[in-house]
Amino acid sequence: METNNIIETNLLSIGYQHTNTVAEAISIQIKKAKLVAIIGVNGSGKSTLLKTLSGIQPALSGNFFLNGKAFQNYNNQSLASLISLVLTQQNFSKNLSVLEFISLGRHPYTNWLGITSRADKKIIARAIQQVGIENLKGKKCDELSDGQLQKVMIARALAQNTPVILMDEPTSHLDMYHKAQVLHLLKNITQETQKSIVFATHEINLALQLCDQIILIHQGKVVQGSPSELIQQKVLLDLFPKDLIVFDEISKSFRMSNKKKHSD
Amino acid sequence: MSSMKNQLYIFILIVGLLLIALLNLSLGSVYIHFSEVISILLGNTSENSSWEYIILHFRLPKTITAILVGAGLSVCGLLMQTLFRNPLAGPYVLGLSSGASLGVALLILGGSLFSGVLASFVFSKWAIVFAAAFGSVLVMMAVMATAIKIKDTMALLIIGLMFASLTGAVVSILAYFSPASNLQQYIFWSFGSLGNLSWNEVGILSLVSLLGMLLSLYCLKNMNALLLGEDYAKSLGVPIQKNRNIIIIATGLMAGSITAFAGPIAFIGLAVPHLIRQIVKTSNHFVLFPAVIFGGAIIMLICDSISQLPGSDLTLPINAVTSIFGAPIVIWLLLQKKKMLF
Figure 1 (cartoon, rainbow over the protein chains, first blue to last red):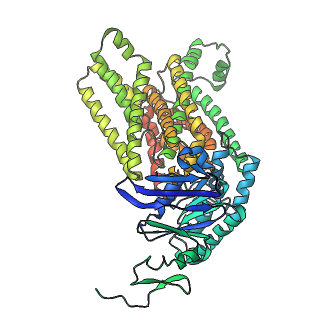
Figure 2 (cartoon, rainbow over the protein chains, first blue to last red):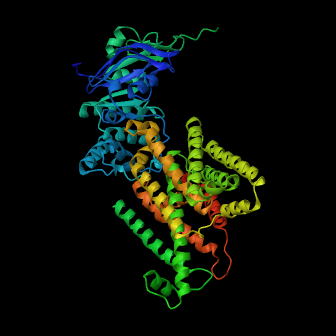
């Protein structure tokens, strides 16, 4: 398949076993160097879609192409140089130093002793510099704040140097400022490194302002488009029940509903 | 710069090991002067031929056994702590030693049922090693299977305890129906002892330990990736299942054969990796692996030297010494929970 889409799915169904389909008929295309947000309400299947795209969770049916080649034709090793992950779980060893943590991103490329070559070290240093955490290099992971840890995990994914980075809620646990900071960082990364970043997020307002593309999962259906296309198609209007939160088309953001909640 | 420091630590550990090994050789119920020990080791004939016999046929195999046991158990502990993502994992706590005990008990106590040619095989050292390693691997697989389902740190330890009491129960049932001589043989084995090994047996133990070490060495790079957690490791191209199987076999072989020859030895596997992590400030298994090998050997030699109660004719069971020293270390580590990192 000749294409400039790094990720392309065709009528993909995701979920847990055939009885519990989370979303179906997913046909999305993700181009190079794009920042793409996956949005939807709690439990809509954002994480499931990410897990399916990363190969942690097998798809139920449909086709999924990575770099123009069917996903099932890749093995773990070859995937490691195409997709890197930033996950929400933090059950990694906190005894790792920041440098060790980021260096593990080079794991697929090092020899059996895991020794980082001069070229590897250069890539690691660039990842650290891109994320702006030079001052944290010597620290242990248990000494870091949530925001710093998030940046370290992003730097690790950058060091893995893959055309696609998948992130699960990279802004959770962060305050408003750091959320904006991390999303700006992601935007810069896509422009500077030509990598595509696909991330699940609850920060719909920030995503609408910053992202190139939005993948909206709503009641088992998936819509993809640029933020302005989604607003034009009015698909955001009934994302949430309107008693509390409404989409304001003028400010292009969600806000508290002015209407008082009906007593029921 | 930090790798220079790590190399220095490992160099200090090697020198320390040599010194403590020499000290260990010169201790015992018969006083032999330090310089005499060195001269005998260098191949010179001593004026006192019984000294020569004591050193070469009694103390040297024992010292080598202590080194193999300490190094092997510590490596098992290190690998298990990373594999289970649990700072309290170790071959003794998770019941590998109990599994080995059960294997040996079935062989020694159940062996009275066999006779003739079969009996001579049943009581051979290779059979004991095989039975113990088999028991260890079985327990390790069972614990691993439950660990995949239950991610709770404490639950895993309780499961290990349950395995220990379960195997204990089976052993006592076997013991009840066994002739006294077999029972005595089993009880002496369960005290733990580094001595009583012939050169032949030391050879078997070295061979199996070496095999276990080589298998572990093959996995070290993937163990580093596993520090990030299984999902990350998988995304870095680590074949999780294959890696897990190799570690299960390697730890089963080492813990099993060590338990077969030296009896169930407590706490070394759990405590040594933590002590080493206090000194070597890294999680890199390529640094921790050699450090734990030498550190474990040193600590085992110290425990053995203490068990001989220098200046007296008595010898304490080695398992008692490692427990008296190991248990407080684990409690101390638990109290400062922040330091309990794997």
